Length: 322
Image (cartoon, rainbow, N blue to C red; front, side):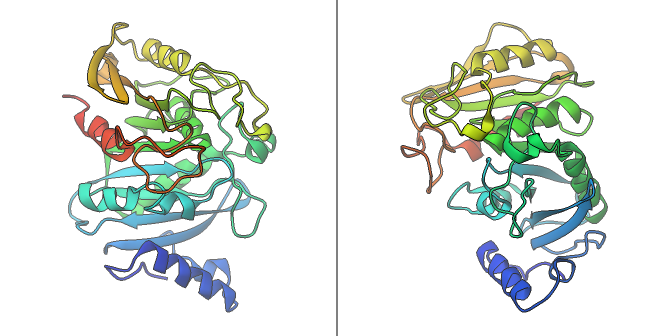
């Protein structure tokens, strides 16, 4: 099934897709062909087999997409217990609007779920989380397959492939940087630290960590917070330790430079690093476990408005090699 007409909202596209499923179409019929070329802007839904199980993902192609022009790709990973539609909601994360404004393709993979609709999904990010970890799901292989498919369908700029994620999705972004360093130029993790079991990247990968000082799910200083999900069954790595690991892996200067300092937030950058990579930490004073700048949230307090995660992330990605 082709992508939506230009101008159709993602919410309308999801509603249409669900309606088609309800009238008896199979997932294969209700999803676009993952081998077909994409030449038009819009929203596309795919269902593929990966690791012997059915996996789904959604793709947004920006309004000004030009098949003749190499285009950046962002892999956006939802949090634990979430699903792809939730991550694709502009109210929750704003990534569709950012994609259209900045001109990058964004893909929303769905984590591992036992539910037909894909909800309550998790990522196998190492020591966390849930059924994806417990069943040793090959999420790295799934993401690799998604990128391979999109590289055949779209004109992707392979020097500008990035990943971001919230919470468990942020943890998974760290794992992708560890195991797919030949693919990802950089990652941006929001409220998710490095909880990989091992990490030996072959190439430097730039890392941006965005974290609230008062995060009550993944505490800034590590361990378990009062709102930590019990299914995590892990002591989360602290933010300082996560940054220290990437500074060492990338061979960065250990003395950071403050690149943003404003009421409610600051950002410290570690550079130069090997291969032109950078490591940056942005800390908000408030927001607990949320996406800075979001209009809708599930955390115990509103997201920080001191920074916008989408803007900070994309500025970081585009500024690499400055």
